[in-house]
Length: 213
Image (cartoon, rainbow, N blue to C red; front, side, top):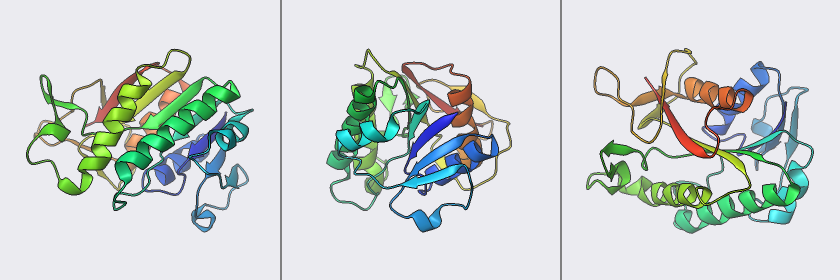
């Protein structure tokens, strides 16, 4: 498949890129840091303004799917507004191009930790991640209003840690997954595997799902 990956050299994006290449896909990698991309014949590096829907539309034409791992940066003081602005531009650009398949890396903060209560609303939610978590929740709500796109959001478990793929994980919907030890964890490798699984074999059209141990 021909995939556009936005944020291809970021913490999550780089793992998704590795998984996609291992499975034989051709990737148009959107990044501000091309030096971090692997040397591979199936990787095509591009730089675009992710806030410009016209540039996004021109970029994604002719591809089979778009995966967005876009994040303006956790330390950015305007992360909330920029995350939503970027998400809106990506959605509108993909629609303008006439492409249907759009997948987003979501957040864990909008998963329910108990019935009716999302993690981001708990008093102890880490302040340094709160605005980003609120933005990804609002982006999910925005996507839920979409009727023309075949969109999917994949939210990680609470602890998304550097680690290889094991292929041994569970999928869920809107509730935070916890293991037998009570911990909510998933490795980057397994998160990426779940994402590319969804690209190849769509099972969660127009909804969010999550992955954990």
